Each structure stands twice: as C-alpha cells, then as structure tokens.
Image (cartoon, rainbow, N blue to C red):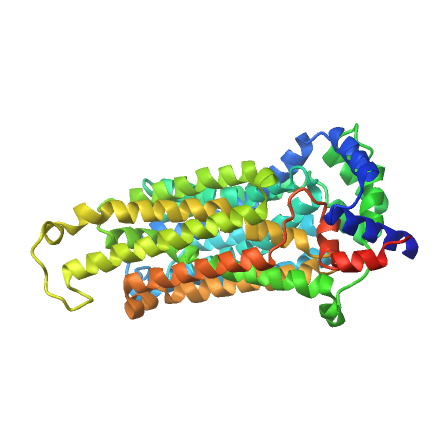
Length: 506
C-alpha cells in the first residue's frame, strides 16, 4: 500500500510540473465529463447561507450605530467609544470562533460544524433584539461574531472538499460573494428598517442553513479520513450524479493521500508539506486585513461623511453593490484566469486607489487648513473643495472595492481551503482564521485612532504601502492552484522539480 501511495504522490507531482501524464489526464477528463453538477450547486447553496449570515453580521454595525448613537433610551445609547466597541467586538468573537471551528471540523466533521454554528447566530441576534442595555448589545455581537468565525473556516473547507477541480474556484468564490451580498442586503434594509427589525431579518439565513444542511452530505475526504469508504462513495454519488463512477474518484483520493487516518502532531510542523502552506495561508490572511477593507466597510458611512457626501448611507449601498458585482465577476473567471493573476491585479488596483484616496484627504485638509496649519487660500478649490474633489473620493473608493472584490476578497479564503493536507486542516485553518480576525480587530478598533495619529491621508497611504507588499508576496510565494486536484496542490509543497527527477522511477 505504501508503494502505491508513493507512486501516486510521484504521479501527482509529475502532473504539477508538466510531465507526461496523458493517459491519466484523459481518464480524469472522461470522468469529469460524466459529472452532473446540479446537487453540488445545491449543497454549495445550503453552505453559503452561512457566509450570507456572516455578511449580515459585518454590515449590521454600519446602519445600526448611527441610530443607536441617537436613540432616546439612554440605557442603549452608544457614545463614541461604545460605538467603536460595537463595531469591532464582533472580530473578537470571530477569532474565538476560528479556534473553535478548527477543533470542530476535526472532531465532528464539516457538516455538523456548519449546522451547529447557526445556533450562536440565532441566539446572538435574539439577544440584540431583546437588548435592554449596552452589554446585551455587546453579548449579541460577540455571539454572532463567534458564529462568523466558525463559518469563515468551515464553509470554504466544506465547499473545496466537495467540488471538483473544474468548478472549485467558482464555488469557493461564492463564499465571499455571499458575504458581500449580506453586507449589501443589510445596508439596503437599514435604509427603511430600525435596528431591531434589522436584527430579526438577519436571523433568517442561519435558520434556513440549519434546515437545508440536514439534507446535505458530509464531505468525501473527511469520511475517508475517518475510514468510512462506503459513506464517502455515497456522498460522491450524490455530488457527482448517477453517471460518474464514484468509486474511481474515491480510490484516487484514497491513494493520493498518504496522510489518511493520521492525526496532527507538533512534529508535523517540520514537514514542508505543512509549514510551507501554513506560512502562505497566514500571510494571505494578514495581507487581506492590511489592505484596510474591514476598517473601510465597518466605518463606510463615516468615511463618506468625511469626504463630504451628504447621503453617505446611500453611498455605502452603492459601494456594497459594486462589491457584489465584481465578486461575482471574480467567481466567473476564477477557474480561467487563475488565483495568482487575480491577486496581483487586485493588489495593483488597491495600491493605486488607496494612494489616490490619501491624496484626496490631503488636498481636502490643506484646503480647510485643519491639519497642515496652513491658512485657507482663496481659490475656486478653497471656496468649494467638495465640489471639485468629490469625484476623486468616489472613484478611489470604487476602484478599491473593485480591486478587492476581484482578488483579495475571495481568494485568500479559497486558497486556505485548498492547500492544507487533511490531517492538519483543522489546526492550520484555525491559525489562519485567528490571524485574519485578530488583525481585523486590531485594525478596526484602532482605525479612528490611526486616522487621528497619521491623519486620514497618512492612514490611506499606509494601506497603499501594504497593498504594494502583498503584490510582491504574491509573485514570490503564492502557488497557482487553478485546475489542480487538492492532492496535486498539496503534493506541490512536498517536492521540487529536482527532487522529482531524483525520485522518479526508471
């Protein structure tokens, strides 16, 4: 059996580096030609109701904070500091949820983890609805954040382990697509609903997810890791349709995974097949937050007010709609353009747009003479700065959201779900999610302080520098995963072309 696994590993690595693989490739293509994707799409839809709920949680603070800051009930009224905590405390819950989710996916599986994470969503929004003081609002936000952390880990894993390589990029991108759809939905609903009715609406998607997931299968790879081959074949028949020979894919996964049945130990961190993808995953999550996206979305209305837009709540809806459109575009082209190219283009867009946004705030502040100390200069710009520069703020925000949505929004979560061996997915994914949400908390909690310290212009120039760094990181370290099986992707981290030549049998 060990010899079979070694031969399969060599074959996958040969495929990675373009060696002759004509027979196996055609066999794989013939298999995929027989696949019917209808039930795979259905299972993906059930799972992405979690990210939709996640989006509702992220977006809820933007319409709720202005209302809670002026509410007549003094027990619920938020001052500036409390509003900051209300927006950012969700990330603390999400960081804890990431750790919990890493344990859950290994112990009870991907499906049950998804079903259980709907409970804190529902309880959290219920507590917000019934809130009698600020601490109940905080508790509700922490619980919904906890559920969001579990969701952000489990759903990408669930989808990547169900989907085949022809559609895995598009299906995986649906995670971020539903997050931004949720953000847009809560912004739109917030135009007409008060904060309590908004929380009621936000509790609907997680309820539906719990119901729909009852009828969906566990992932074949998790079932095989538990020694349940028969159940894995049944899951594959459900996901691939009646015409595809599920036994062939089941055998391929089983033979290619030399870590089947093992458990994670700290000694595994010495394995390049573990520490290399872990380093890539951690840096992807860190750089995603260092673009400033969550800070910008949490305080979208405040940013537009500072940019002199009177209808800032409508402007945030437009931003969210832009995010939805271009995330959908990314999902459509993901399996054609590839992950790496989209990450680089995304980084370039964000680097330039955040730099331009910094220029806007710099020119605006100099015109008003509030940060530079310069006296107001009499000129057409000084007389009406917003009229002359508002186009710059609007276009900069639009280009930033477009760039983020095309690459650095969906792809870090997608790549995280693709690169880890089965035995370390729980641990490695939880570290990545903790990195993401921990850095999100630090950035969102200190965003206002950062703007006070560096000025608005300096803050956006800092984000621009981070975007430039993520371009360099992508070019050097991020592998292309387009069109490869999970086993081929994981095998790539274990060998080099030189090693292949050494290991290849004669």
